[in-house]
Image (cartoon, rainbow, N blue to C red; front, side, top):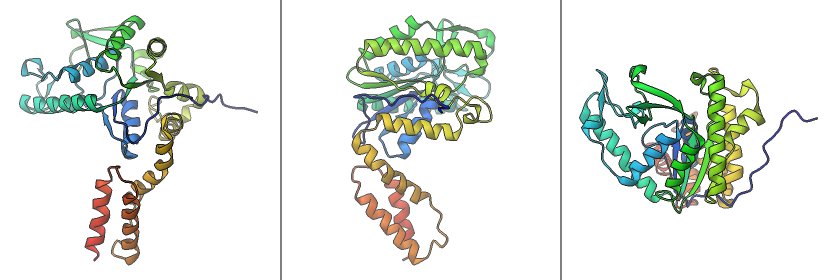
Length: 321
């Protein structure tokens, strides 16, 4: 008997390896997957402008990175406590305009460099609902009065047209992985969330049919159809539970990592776990031997960034010498 409808394994020529440079943009699910890649020592930059939920704001961020146009003070708003920008997440807001500009321009510089270097771009769309301020889609409303915004749902044509310009422009020559976030946007209502996800899914289908450099990874379907149970959601019944994220990461690595990366990944994860290990006696000879062994394992993996772990293991050896 079968009690699940599993998503069939993906067969694709889009692979991710340790030699690739990755830019990941979009919803909090994009951040989760990028953090997994980062922890596994892949060269990845995630959401320089902060979490972005809708396709037009993601596209706007990419255009701003390509243009390398600095943020000016005239673009900032002030809510009485923080200076903010409608194109950036609230994490980049600040108590003074100079600090806000410093954070935001640093983010754009990071995004510009990541866009220039990347050959793999992951775009995760969270919602098709957008808020417009004076006729312009914003990435974040920054708790400003609802009366200042107009809410509407993007059309498939808008999404496809906007992304197509990027695929032929700043993203030309890069492999693009598209996903729909499995996070439920209950603020849109269950019916609104369903319409939103359907809009995003159809738009991505059209983009992948039109552009051979683009591929869809079915994170949304894996959670809602394969797992399909509230036990795989967090207590808020909105975000994936840790076990669901683990499963999504497992399916992601199966489908997308190249042969070398799949071979190296267990060893990389083991070294990272060893660095997080809390020894029973940090001054023991056994722990010194343990740290030396980890440095030997790191030396056998040239080209991967284990600077933090190496420093930790060396410090433990020096302290106990």
